[in-house]
Image (tube, rainbow, N blue to C red; front, side, top):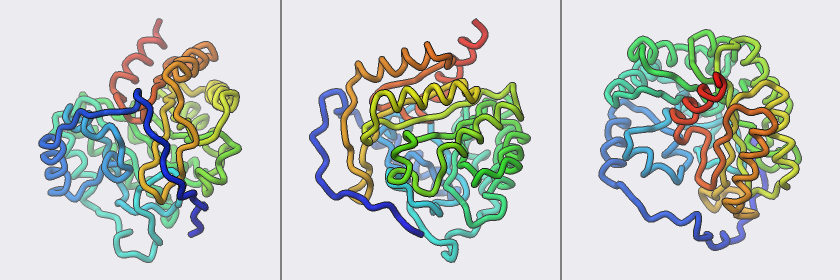
Amino acid sequence: MELVQISQRPLPRLPEWLRRSETHFEAVTNLKRGLRNLNLHTVCESARCPNIHDCFSRGAATFMILGNLCTRGCGFCSVPKGSASKREFTLDAEEPANVARMATTMKLSYVVITSVNRDDLADGGSFHWAETVRQVRRSLPQARVEVLTPDFCGDMAAVARVLAAGPHVFNHNMETVPRLYSRVRPQANYRQSLEVLAFAKRCRPDVLTKSGVMVGLGETTVEIQDVLEDLVANNVDVATVGQYLQPTRRNLSVAEYVTPAQFEEYRDFGLRAGLKMVFSGPYVRSSYMADLVSERASANACS
């Protein structure tokens, strides 16, 4: 697998608006213990999300299925990479039931599920995806379920399979602007990701569609605005815009720290363009506060 060339220059100093001191070590430790007991992973841990203390202390987490090894080498992501020959790539048949069990133990009213890319599997892992959603919905019939899926290499049958399982929100991230795909997301295709989102809305018009983009990777303001307009053109309901933060020295360096004022401008632009909800801010991530984002988007759609 070919990985992107990554700069090793030191991180610039964090600006004041990105400094956080609040920690909740006991909550994080306790939740991690429960996850490990069921052999479960979260993107919060594997992707080194800066919001982990906040989310875990509130009893929120984003489950990451299909294992903890990804077949792609995106420059921004710290999820472990591997080849399909590794033993760890074997699917855990108990994972769907264990996700449902953990979500029930956590008494979640809103369940967010994502996954690594599994390009080694003929179905991209979509049958496993669908079974996980079904198990969660069976165990927590009153809960809302949000899925943050890979592109399944453009296999719309795989996308339809996940949607048929009954998620309430379908999320697939664009991640960055087209010009930067070769560095940031080299094994993906910008147009293909838009097609996945458009297909999801055609397949299930009742499902809220959502996508996220990172800033601070060297993009321009106009390029982000173009992405937001592309989302509107493909009937996406919700966009998230957050600051890229380098998770490890092996990942792409931060090119710029975007100001809070600029995040407000992105929010206002997206709403004017026709999005139902734009969650934009330095610490925004695609699954962060997902329950509140979904609730507000649904309210805006009805107003």
